[in-house]
Amino acid sequence: MSAPNKSYDPVEVEALKPEEIERMRDEALAAFAAAADLDQLQEAKTAHCGGTSPLALANREIGALPPQAKAEAGKRVGMARGAVNKALAARQSELEAERDARVLVEEAVDVTLPHDRVAAGARHPLTTLSERIEDIFVAMGYAVAEGPEAEAEWFNFDALNIGPDHPARGEQDTFFVQGAEGAEGTDGSGVVLRTHTSPVQIRSLIDREPPVYVICPGRVYRSDELDATHTPVFHQVELLAVDEGLTMADLKGTLDHMVQALFGGEGMKTRLRPNFFPFTEPSAEMDMVCYVCRGESVGNPDRPCRTCSSEGWIELGGCGMVNPKVLQACGVDPEKYSGFAFGFGIERMLMFRHNVEDMRDMVEGDIRFTRPFGMEI
Ligand code: PHE
Image 1 (tube, rainbow, N blue to C red):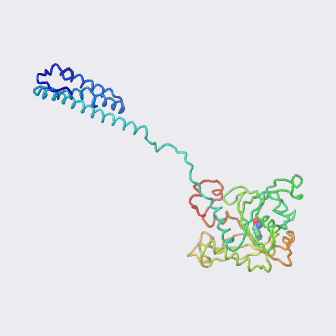
Image 2 (cartoon, rainbow, N blue to C red; image 1 turned 180 degrees about the horizontal axis):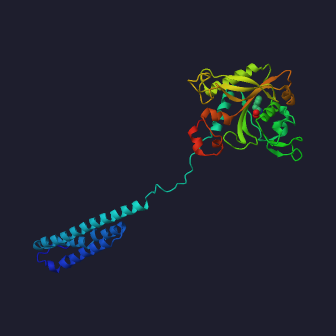
Image 3 (spheres, protein in one colour; image 1 turned 180 degrees about the vertical axis):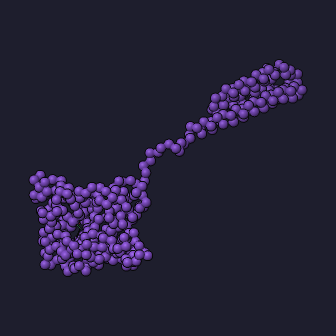
């Protein structure tokens, strides 16, 4: 700042001339107007409002003026600075508004766009149900046993006392994979897609020393057309117990326990009806009490039951005492050991347990079918 000068002529101070102040102001206003974004405006602000800007420097000269000139120059500079600050603030909010509008557009999320996130899956109810059944028996000390789906004919048929002439061996039921001639390592036996999980029982009896208690879940194949009540690929759970002194009473008690554990509550029991299977003797069909009406719809027209058609019983599957010929084929002494076995289809149980009306729903893999069954594990 220059020293006070009593004879100072304000007109002679270049920076404080009215036209100079006007020019500084106009340059500032033009620079603000020309700033295309907030960064450029910041530069213009430093240049025109900062401590070394022309107007700030001019302001400093005021102190050196004689008193009579101070007021006039101060007013002039003050007004110019006021106008510059106002223009700066206006341009600032204008550019901020522009930026905000642009950001809103640029960063907008279109919630209607298709997304590629992988939908959460669900466990198939056949798996859940099968594991639930396994759990019941694992809790009783049974082991879960598994075997190959492409199985030697000997395991699937011969060892189970299903002779070469048995209709189940015929082409209409069995998927043949390889004839005996071409099959390697099967001791002259052909290869089929297993028609039941009973071959796993044979493998278990051969591999383990009695007592043997196994539960064999798995996928099985029969050459049926896919329709509402049939599928060529389905699931079974079969059970085998071989020990000293086992009787049909053990079989019956085991079946009753299973249906009580699966369907719960009072009055759940099973009944056996005579039947024939080559691998069991005696053999039986097993039914369980209808888990909905618990038998109360029988002869009671006031309480019809859709689940069992008012018959009171629901057919489950087959069972019996292991045929001594099967024990012998597996090297187990039938004089010392006896056993019981049963087997049933999981699809059928899923149908009546959960009112699934069409078997095709179970094989189509549509997640809308599986999801309502939940994630029970
Ligand atoms: N293996 C028989 C089937 O698939 C079911 C069964 C198993 C029957 C055990 C009796 C004993 O049809």
